[in-house]
Amino acid sequence: MGPERADDVFQETMLAALRAWDQANPETLRPWLFTIARNKAIDEDRRAVRRPDPQAEPDAWPSDEVTDRLEDPVWDEVMALPEKQRAAVTLRFRGDLTHREIGLVMRTSEGAARRNVIEGLRNLRERINDE
Image 1 (cartoon, one colour):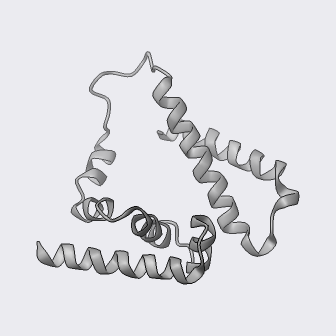
Image 2 (cartoon, helix red, strand yellow):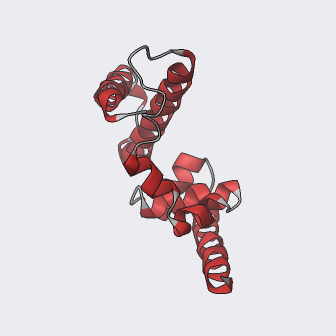
């Protein structure tokens, strides 16, 4: 999903949150909203795969920005982590969520979320130090 669709996905997220507002828990509002946003972004990515872009040039993707991120050796190591560790580390350091919020997003306990972050960081350190 490119920046041209990000505003639309944001609006879809806010509309979905507004529709479900009466179900929201004030104590878990942030992870609840992150979950809605994640699901809307996934939906948009799936739609984008099915929707051809007649104006796109064959060499227009990946952009330099995407290429730079994909070539980041730390990102390669994060992507190689087991799924739960990868998600927990990403939510902690890219999403700036607390362990409690990570647990809510991942539908697990706060302790399990903390353990996934710790284990993910330990695996990253080992992989990076080995290289």
